[in-house]
Image: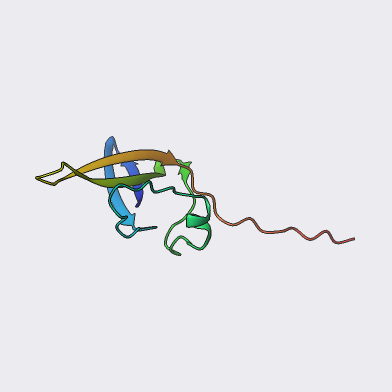
Length: 103
C-alpha cells in the first residue's frame, strides 16, 4: 500500500492529511512453500493519476511511504494468523518530459 502524507504549516500550526492506495495484493500461497517476490511483480502496476511527486516547498510538504503487510499462518494443531507490517520511505518522481532541441 502506498501512503501519502501532506503537511501544511500555517501561522504556527500544522495540518496533515493522509491518502492510501493499494498497489499490489497477492493471493494465498500453499502451506510449507517459499514465496519469492520478484521485480516483475511491479512491472505492470501503474500508480493512480492522483499520486503526484514528492515535494517540499514553502510551508507544504508531501511524502510517501510503502506499507507492506505480511500474514503468516503459524502452528500445527491450532493455526493462528500473525501479521507483520513493514514501512519504507519512498520518493515518488513524476514522469520526465523529453526536451527537443531546436536549431
